[in-house]
Length: 130
Length: 349
Image (tube, rainbow over all chains, first blue to last red; front, side, top):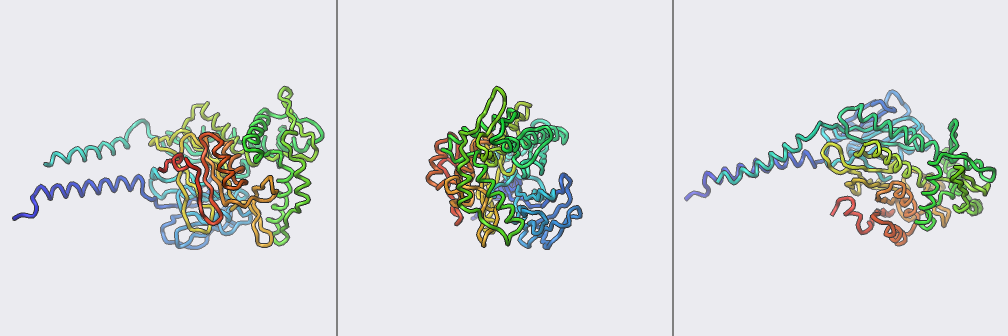
């Protein structure tokens, strides 16, 4: 006695392929994006940093050495030092998800998180709330 | 047997094809300005070329700059009478102003009525005291002090919004009380965003998102896949390690948050933020953040300040008194409460 027919295998194979296809399409649309930080000095893109590369530590951009950023091993990035008076940039805290941003107005520096690859439909265009 | 599965594959293929075609391809662009309203402004749009997007972004910049200069209470601009000019002429003389200032004052009077006095642009003399102490405290943290209740109460005697005299025919504004000061910080950004948004629509730009320091106006839809704009509402507690509280799907709506985590100074280890309760004359302590969603960005801005200053139940009543308006409250212990239709309005069932 046979446990399965040839057509059963075909059905299983088709279902598997369809599921994989659906998963890939779904993930590309709704999945969590890999993230990248972009640092702007006024309107110029001064530096991009991949947040999921495992790199950690402090750094500055050449245009504004008094502003220091820190990347943590959990993939977050933050302003940690600035010579601005109100320190709003530092108070904004650590960023790690698409759409978040922090700005140091007196120094003309903006830090924002963007998708490392294609933007997914669920990625926020902007994140507000602090 | 095999044939039954063909439709499934076709459906998936069609779905893929549909996303791949449909009109000329539009790219997503973002522009950021750092010089307006003492905050970061973001403009997002979809266009076939960068030049097309830049035209829209430049229009936003040019228009916002007009409002920024007119509504400024700290700086002078050549040839412009702004709100600072009105304040400097309190008790002296009426000031001829652009009608955009008169319109803002009229809108603010309406907001005052609708919020039972919670939003009061004539509260400037009290806010100025807090502003000055905060600036001093930020510059010299060890010397940071609190204003005395006596000086706050004295200033609060000069906050009657009904005392503003407007002559629309002559286009003048006069503050007869020499100690009254206007402060439009809790309403002007949102109002300006709404007016600029109107201008964009008049010029034929229907799909865009503008954020002036978190005063977000989402118009139309994203220009590529016609999906709704997505606005993340961040956890106000920076150290909580929690991600966004919600991602709101918005079309033709405004979202504004008032929070106490960024603009503050510290006195004897305690934080004093910038949103001052008109009743207690002290920073309101009910919530870490309040988010308002409604169509009009100016009213969203005003309401977020008003609701931040009210106990929860009173805030709920106020929000419910406005049509198609919802709110999110985040308490200092991290708990959240939402108005009844909040989740539905942001596309979460």
